[in-house]
Image (cartoon, rainbow, N blue to C red; front, side):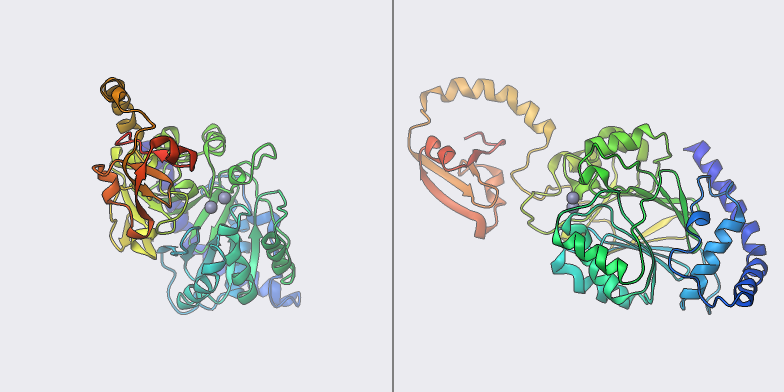
Length: 424
Ligand SMILES: [Zn+2]
Ligand SMILES: [Zn+2]
């Protein structure tokens, strides 16, 4: 972390020097554009020059300037206020899905847009934030819970660039995304690992390497948003193989804020990733009472063990994290609620200690046959069954709870699984 901080310090020194010459150079470039009769940058212009495969402090300032000049011409928000170093990172509550809006100095990035049910809410949210146009849209991957709302945004806001992984999905919503982009004259860009892009006074780096051998989730574009010394890590729905690829890239994954991969699923957020990222805050975006049980107990247990503060859209709604380049403040404050989405979900540490108990209880309970009738409590949502005395049974929502008298075998035949905690 120390070495990293040093690099970031260098980056902010660069930023100060850059800021001093910025107005003069911008004026020269804009004058140049006007003289050639080009009144506005066409979408995707500067495509080759704005992506710089170098650290921000080593990249050609010229490339950044051209990009910024192009951004300036399309943004109304940055004119009056003096350039500030604030990065606003909105995690929009889209239920089961993901949508993140990042803003620096009047420039906007929309990373995913949630599912269909949230699409109009995302557009309304963006309008409320003063979005007139989007500098970037990134589709982490093409699952409906990430791109439906992007179609809505493309239909309302002018967009300069759109990025996504290099596969095609067979779904209707994917077709809608591509045609909504095309109707603005945009082609889907497949950004390369290591490239940097400027977003106002902040920047982001592409962390993932697209690999056709992996599935959609594991081809998610992962990015690091960087504002001064603050870093925000987004990995989309990357699961273990995608995370392994991120780890083997050697890129700096250390961050202040980590948006937990795949909605807090146990298939993501490996110990290795957390060991490199060491975030102060973890953000979970998932729907209340979602059918996947997100976030999973295994993930929440890791976050709790590392004393990472937690913010959750399923419990807290919309989240806003603001970086001033040195620290991050959260609204609302972290809930630090580490309970899983599914109350039946048992973290691995408890499971292993109960395996030992199970050996003993198996002997004790060998008298009761699985064909013997007795009372159980069912969770019709998660399809788990409990003993009436089980603590997890108390947490079942009334709508999902059903009392049952019968045999264990009957329940298993009906597709129910025994609770891991009470072991009925
Ligand atoms: Zn998803
Ligand atoms: Zn997905």
